[in-house]
Length: 94
Image (cartoon, rainbow, N blue to C red; front, side, top):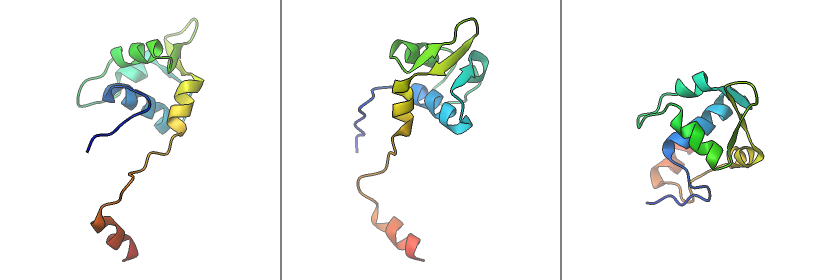
């Protein structure tokens, strides 16, 4: 089943934003972003792409990237499957 996103991003870009959520930070250094592990790669490119898309902004005078309101809105989304699989409902009752 295809997932339709209202915010078109690569999986690496989403992983970078998830790291902000995981750490509870509004600013991460470039070194911290480069250290994010992702099966399809990582590094500086996803952060730069998120700047171009308006999700991050470079912090003046540092090598940090700060969340924009657009990114905060994205991270506030509670993504849940529209339909649960039949086996998952039965295990919750046990």
